[in-house]
Amino acid sequence: AWEQSLAAEAVALHRKLCEAPERRDRPECAAFLAEHPHLDLAQAAAGLQSAKASIQSEHKAWEQSLAAEAVALHRKLCEAPERRDRPECAAFLAEHPHLDLAQAAAGLQSAKASIQSEHKAWEQSLA
Image (cartoon, rainbow, N blue to C red; front, side, top):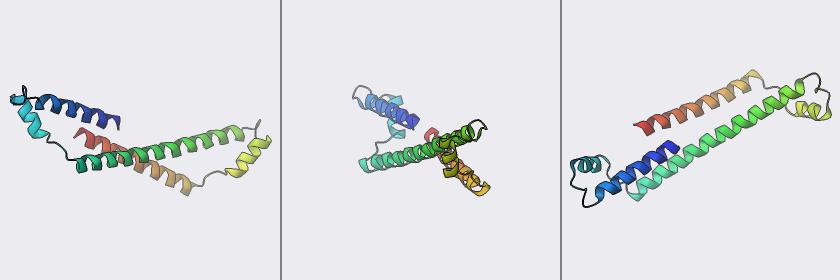
């Protein structure tokens, strides 16, 4: 996400420099301006909305992953023989039983989809 923002800022700066009257007629600026036409406001807004949705999706996936890791670590600590009988661990283990394989597979599929989406967006930012 930050890569896209940095690339957009670089293009905007390059455009600003090339649009200056003293540089506008330079061959490299004419070529750049032909390759990078101005976006209208609707296009820019759509791009920002898309980037926002992507960031929100990535953030949600990260939060879910972090929460799952925290529960897994808590479970691992509470399942240790020296802690298993502590009241807080007994309560935690009762509230958080082990996931069955179907639930674990669904979680992995969700994480895979998120990674693929992020990868696709990254590839598009390089194009």
